[in-house]
Length: 127
Image (cartoon, rainbow, N blue to C red; front, side, top):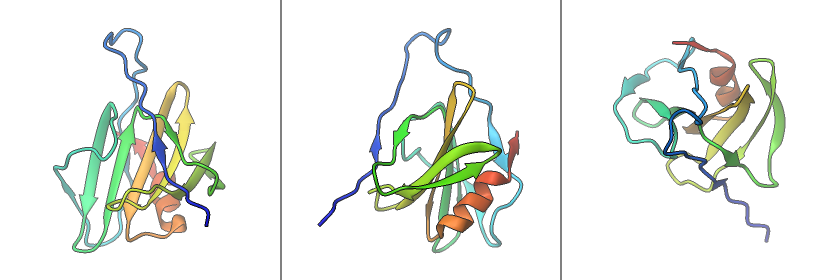
């Protein structure tokens, strides 16, 4: 049995001058019934935003470095190559990740298909 888990490797730097400045992104599309909530980040990142409904959750993170392992699919997010696949995190079992310049972004979700997460990711705009 093949076990696939998301290995989140966080690259951090105590010196802010050398850490990439990741633009905050906000979704132009969030599924009906979801609202922004205060929540701890599921991964270490420069910033995160979370939306929830009763049964679903989306978290957008900027400034992360993630390795989605072997069980991934290729996609395009905001005109850039991306990967999406299982995370191994119970509260967010699916994620999509991509890099813009020196910043890596991730959208993690629970209760969403890959296509739905990609729609949210592709709808992100500068805050």
